[in-house]
Image 1 (cartoon, helix red, strand yellow):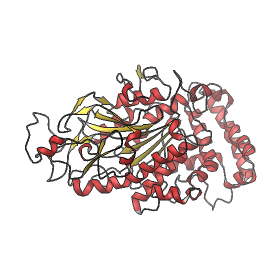
Image 2: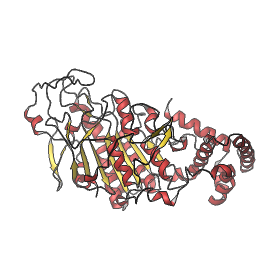
Image 3: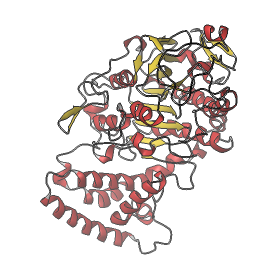
Length: 491
């Protein structure tokens, strides 16, 4: 199902039952608006037993130890960024370009390996750290001294679907909660007006696995990612009732709320052990509150011309859309959203990082989409003092092969790829791990998604081994039964 239709249906249902209208928001002040509408919906006996969506001061500073990070912005490159064409410089690959190498029994994902291929892009060292970066990332390269690089990340799969699930949920199969959902579940919301977990897919479509990448799995549905598409005429479909609904008035809204409250009380009284009604009520309340909060967040006219220029928000097509998503990510984080996920690349054979056919022509356009705005986001977080409590994560589902495919393309490679982190609690200008001489396999200080999320949770005040939920007789964790905090990159 198309994600816009899915979200639209949910919010249509919410608006139908809540009967919240624009007129209510106009004719009532904020306090009375919330008290008259939403508190009437909240069943006291249910709310007393659950704090799943309420800000908890004990949680906001960490559960198990003091937190250094309050919120996370994750940039996810859909399709598999080529590490040896971006951040992982290998002199041996340069020397042995065109040679055929026996790689043993391991086969690539979709074809027989061709000869070794050096990067077609120019390498240069940047910053005091001397980090090698190719010319596909000229803007990001300026900030390498703020980043901690994981140079030997690995995946259990070199197939998009399972690998994407793994990097987002810790499991190869669908049905498990995503990292943003776990964080929402553990820490609650920092604001009453916006979700804890917001997702902005590429304007061209959802990534591989669709909404499964940001599902709440077996956690309450209120913790799933809320997808928004700022490029659409209505970024959150059907958040407001249609202008044609003249029958929705403050009086009719109050009558509907009273009726719905009575129905909910009767329903809950017969099903005391069922939390689904609670989740729906809280989701509908949040949808209604977003009617007030969301328009302000999406109003980019409030930003200066300098900020728009730095992010590149006026660039045409998907480039400009991604720029605006990065700017909105900062605005969401600024307003208390705990986990913001920004996707580059849609699912499918093109318009993403899955560069099978031609690295020289396919990689630069998708790299250009993210280079300027991600660098601007990092700059912006620093300038606003948000770098002190915000973590920026730049990652992908797997890397690519050092061998050719289809002439000058590269195949999937789950054996090594690169991730970097910047911001609160992280050392800048450091790297951890190393791939082999060709960037074919991780070789030294290998890391994986379990270690990455163990580290992120640690920075948010959570012991990843203690954050668990019993499901079907098993104590499930975001890090499964694996993971260790990557201490060398911590400040």
